Image 1 (cartoon, rainbow, N blue to C red):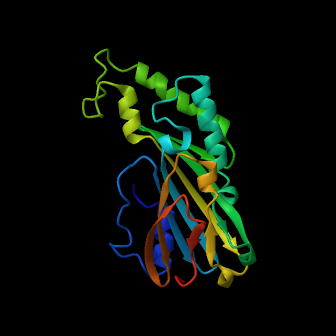
Image 2: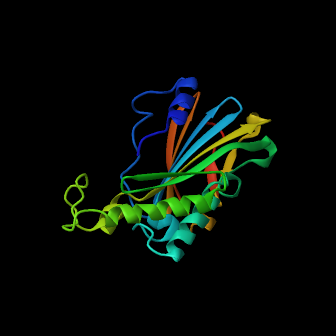
Image 3: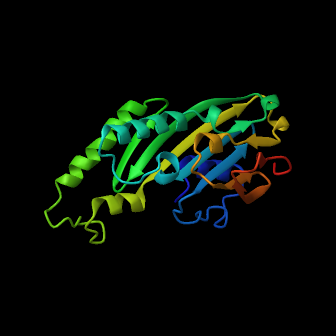
Length: 217
């Protein structure tokens, strides 16, 4: 996992873009998602990385309508941060941008806002591309793996980026995490917060009520 350009920009603006701050999260682990949060002035930027198994229960390329429907539904939810990550109501935060995508193997399909149906359709094309591989099943760029499903499972990941603007950022104290209710297979979030005061990391289990922002900016 690597931080997005949006997140790096926020870290630079906050004056904390050190090598340690930009250190990558742990490798792809089922049950564990990563959430980067940058707060700069009245702006909150977030970037989520979650294994496909945590979100839809599988990591192979969608091969039937049920799989495609599950991906489309997940992308719609992931495109709505207001139902996943909730800053304090008193801070008056509103979503200004949201984008979700699924990375599977070498395929990268974007879904903006609630355009989940298009996403699912595009993702299905990845299966067609896989079927066109040589009969020996070895993809040239996949370290000789013979099983396309295994390769997709190695790389399948949902990603999302969000931006909020808050009317009263001084009242930010807490981030509620209904994300765990939406995606019951997710066991914990590795949260990394970057503000003008520096970087703070914490692993938050699904049993937690949320993540404390107070005292970090």
